[in-house]
Length: 197
Image (cartoon, rainbow, N blue to C red; front, side, top):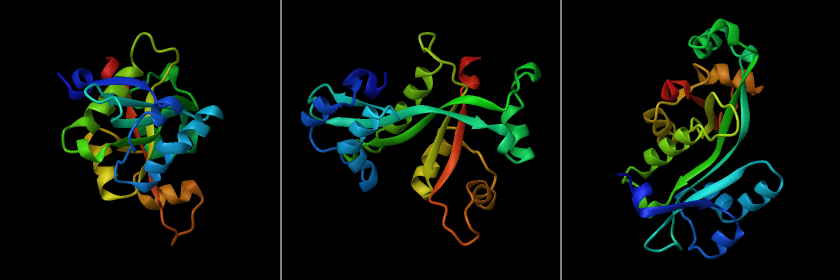
């Protein structure tokens, strides 16, 4: 059994939960700021919805949080090699210009719970959530703008996410960035069809 399933309770991350919880610290200041205050305004503007798992033994402790919103992958704007790779398992009669996706906008695991496999459990939870028969919308892909840093990129790769673009240069061109400009995030995706088959 997983830690999140047996030791935690899933809930919406709203003002009540934030006010009744200890300060969430995942070790990344941008994510900490978002989950401590910005996620409320984000939700009110209907830009995304945040959720968390709280520890059953002490509900004031948030073990992990994430935010999701609707998105899509527009394959016509991808280089041909990437487009072919992305749609290779989609029947020809179902090939479109864009495919429904869910964006994992933010995701963090409480520093006190790192190294316990919770990050993997959390991604598995999100993946299964969008292939569940009770899901109210079609969703073929999960996408993420992962911080272009070794730890986040490795985390998503170890959970079977792939780069949407084969190189940073290719992605910079797509994003309209200049040659010497830094790429702060990398677009990555996971094809949910592998779980629903």
